[in-house]
Length: 346
Image (cartoon, rainbow, N blue to C red; front, top):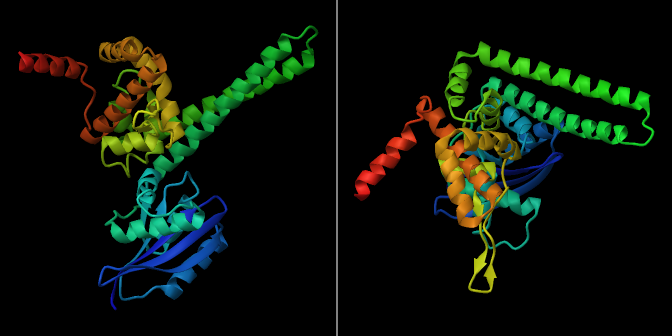
């Protein structure tokens, strides 16, 4: 029977690649044919490619499908791209939602690779293109800065504890202060590199100039969001973006006995969520529309953090709209929309 499509589903880990090779036949039956495990190393990638070539047929298209798992999938994607392979990288929440539709009770690396393969066989996925190197550099720099800030906070806490002792050690205090000074200098170097990258790319400068017109959004927030989404490369709509950031609502309810409180899933990119926390607070303080949204939500359920998260979600959606429309933020937009709604209701 003729093969219509071949898919290699890969569950990517930091050290291991769990692979499932499948086909869809002319009668539309899906068949999982071969399984393999390879190291996530340069030599392991070569062995994986050779293994696939030994099982694949030249008569039907071959497609590699994997999840976007932090940075661990990138080496594999770049390697396959250098070989001219057709690749699709899928957001993790899509695979998770699809996995729940399967009659599988055990979640392992092997069953995950099977689910990825079946997902690739059933769907017409968009091909992944190697991203602009600028976004990759931005991600490296913004994540390095985040780690430096966390380390500096920890060292400052150590300094506070040391100074609060009955008989503090002066040499220890001097060394801690020196470490803080080094971390501050390194953070400044990273910010200078970020600004230089933005300045040297006219496209990136236009994008960040538009995004920073949004209340509360500064250069660091703009480049972080662009870096973590690769310029919104895999994002097709606002709902998908919110889910990718882990800001989507998770609710557990069953009859009258189980009434779980709605919470955000947090099953997404934590760097995105973290980058929006302070901008949301600034937007609430300085922009009337977001202040009204915050006040309305707090008066409804009395939880300030929940209302702040809702503003974070709105800011992220607005950044996506601004990026796609290539326009600047219009502070009169919400007012005009509100007045139009009042006219309609009257």
